[in-house]
Length: 332
Image (cartoon, rainbow, N blue to C red; front, side, top):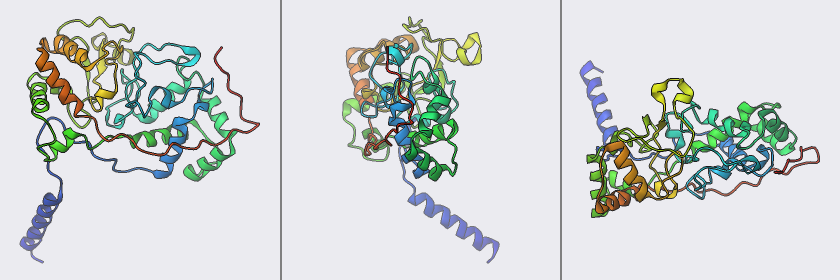
C-alpha cells in the first residue's frame, strides 16, 4: 500500500471514530462518564468492607455512617459524629464522584481514594480504631480470609489490601445521566427556561471559574472568603495544614456540585442549611455579588439538574463473626 493510501485509510478511520463518539455542547462542565475500568472482585470485597462496622473500635461505625449512600454520600449533619459520640470539626464531603477529585478531604491531605480510606479507621475522633486491630478483626473471620486470598492472592491481610478494595468500590460511585448531562449530550428539552437562565447566570457570574469539569468542582483549592472574609464555625484551616504555608490558610478543596441538592448542609463547617443560603453566601464572599431573589431561585433550579443516577446495588451480606473475633468496645 502506498503512503497516500495508508494516509487515506488512517483519515477514514479517524473520521469513523469521530462520527461514533458522543457529541456534547462545548461548556465548562462535562458530562459524567460511567466508570471505565474496574476490578469487580475488589469491588465486591470493598463493598462489604465499606458497610462493615467491625472496622471501628465500637463496632457501630462504618464508612457508610458518615458517607451514607442513601443520603447523597454524606450524613446531612453539620459535622459528623464519631467514636464516643464525638462531634467532629468538619462537614463530611460526599463520597459520590469522589474519584474525580484531585485529592481527598477538604484540605487534600490524602492523594487518592486509597489513602483516604485508611484515615477514618485510625482517627480517634472517627472510627477510633487502629489499622492493626482492624486487620486483626478481619483476619479472625474465616470468610474474609478466604475472600482476601481469592481477590489478592495472599494469606496475610494488610491494611493495603483493605484500603485498595474500599477505594475500588468507591470508584463505582459515579452519578451519570443527570438532566444537565442529558442537555449537554443534546437533549435540548431536558432543562426548563428557568434552569437554563440559572446556568447562564452561573457562568456569567464567574461560578464556573471554580466549579467546572465532570464533577463541577473538586479539581482545585480556593480561598473561602476571597472578596469578603468568611466567619467559619470550624477550626479547620484548610490546605495550610498540609503545606505549612500561611498563604494556603482557609484554602479548601472546591466541593463538587454534583447531587448538591442531596448533600446539605453546605461548606466545610456545614453552616449553610439550604442551597438558597449557600448561593447567597458564595455570591457575596467569593464574587462580591448580591443575587436577587429571582436570580438565586434560577441558580438553585440549575443546581438541582446536576442530580444524577444514584448508586444502585444490593446491600452486602457481611461475613459472620466467630468466637475468635475480638469483641467490639461499645461507647462508654
